Image (cartoon, rainbow, N blue to C red; front, side, top):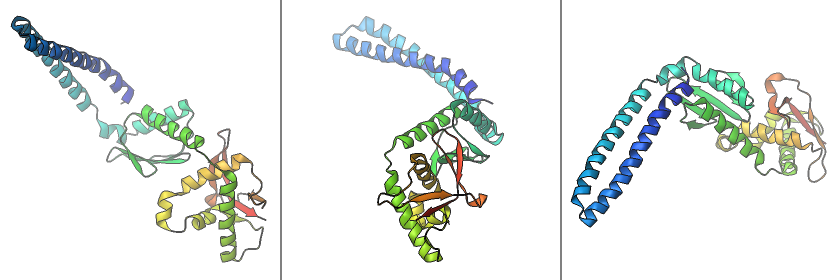
Amino acid sequence: MNYENFYEDLQPIQKSTKDSLASLQKLFKAVGKDVESGDMKNLSRNLESMAQAAAALSSSVDSMKETVNGFDTKSYFESGEFASQMLELCQEKGVDVQGESPIYEMFPYRVRIDAENQDLYLDRKKVQCMRPQSFVELVRTGQEKLNRAPFRPEVFAGELGDAYDMAALKMGKRAGADIYLTTLYKFLAPMSRFRKDYDQQSFAFDLARLYIAHLEETKNGRPFQFGPCRNEKKAIRILDQNGKEQFLSTICFY
């Protein structure tokens, strides 16, 4: 199964439906004029034409219903065909994707396919979309919008530095010690209700923009640097300005 084939099958029926609707609208206006002017002969002719146009419209709608009912959405999702076509389009459109069914990462989004209920989730938001092409375009548009959003790297670096100080104090770390970024995230969003508004994917996206900014010190002149990836499980995957993946693990402030 392929949604694009289904889409192409519906196009001529949609055009026929559109034409019938346009004809009905035109005839309805003509009937109104006939009634107003008292042109009974023309009124009868236009009403007969309306009946024919309505019959054609009804036939088109029935054809659309038959075509739609013939598309097995459950099988489309459960067979993996939707996911396969989605991945092909990601490659075609230049959308970076990692993971495997049912969970994928399209940085900075997390995508989940609920095959049982034929639902898609973009982060926590349910998206009603069974056309892979439309869904991939939705993701790409969202990524472009996020990249255009205002971001002040020096402000984020300062907030990260404050979280670093709290973590170092609590963990008994010396100044300049490497601390895992995943640890700092918990200090930036200490409560679960905060993490709903600022999840780890959002944190990773901010880290990516900070990394791309090539900033070396905070607004108040405090130097910092990202450290080596010592634990792959704790590394945070980001994409740099060239769309190449990088893994950030630790950071230290001096």
